[in-house]
Image 1: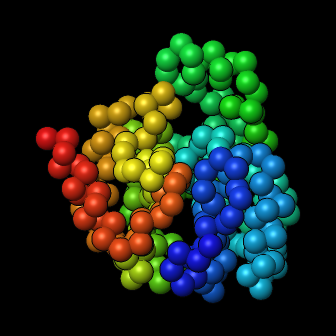
Image 2 (image 1 turned 60 degrees about the vertical axis):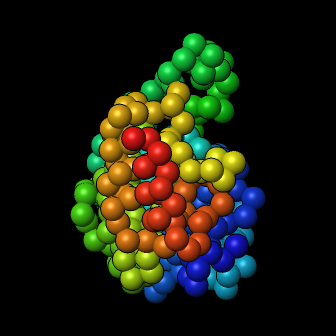
Length: 228
């Protein structure tokens, strides 16, 4: 699904959304749950590229529905992995995924392996707030903690595009904060949303739900205004 020229959401990925950026550097943002590598690789071929054209995989944060197919994708493509330095211990398997809040989610997390099990992968490039990446017309890394300590968004000023992972939630296509059971610090998460709302973007690509194409920054600001 083409969102804007050179930006595609990969169809039928289970878990979180995965986005392909088709500039002179072919990049992937997030990988969904385990088992999605074949779908992502086929999507690359369908767009006239080859798997080994993929050179960068950017991870927005460490939850399994975003990193589940990361190891399989790096094995298939040799792409470098980029993530905020605070996420690296969990992505690389050095620390376990945190247990979600709430008795029910905590129990499910322990009893259902799919909620926490993934193949770890090394991170090649630690990211920091304000770092610039040579993607499309230029991307800026925005550190947006709260959901996880190292959650990031990618801002593309030239395209007026913002890719947010779960920093901004859009389940059922309604804007909101990240899911509370999986968010470590909700007050901090809301501050991160306010920081993103101050950016200039018309197109919003979230970790879940359909993109907003046109007026996305105004919609986010309006939602945040309702909190006061």
